Length: 210
Image (tube, rainbow, N blue to C red; front, side, top):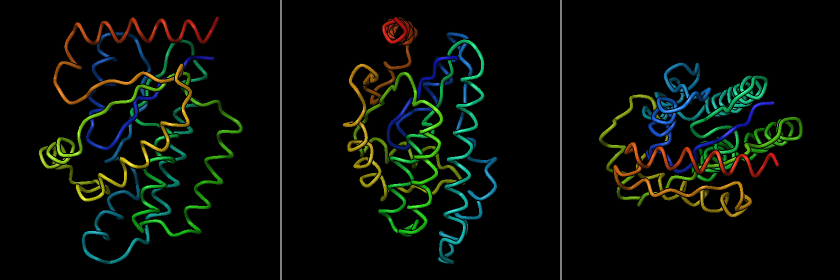
């Protein structure tokens, strides 16, 4: 079974960017969010922006949870190390819980998503390692405005709610499974920082497998 790493944190913190940079530096298999490819994401965003309600919210969230479970299974089935931007646990603990708190998912929909997540986690192990990226909320807001994704459920106003979900979730992650990085400056992505992070990953994973 291959090892699995999840890069986690609030939206716009740079998860996908770091995954892609690590992929350039080492032979990781990757699993990405695929915003544009998801069948219900655009429909939900269009409805929310037009004030037509949230009829695609549950379908969209289940689709994401299923995608992440499938990506995990595929990467675990091959040798080497798999690397995800976010992942199944983030999609549940941050976005499913966050969207419930924001009223995008109702209580019954959230309960079904939680049942699905717990069922998958009973069958598939959680990531071997989490890399948590942190940056101030005002900086995340500026990044969201700058990237201006056409398909995105989260908004600048939802950042504090999502950050609260991140902070509560991270408290439950064992310290030996967690690497915390400052994502507020470009220094995170320099060749020297990437090389240091790769060394840290190797050491952490070797400890977990011995």
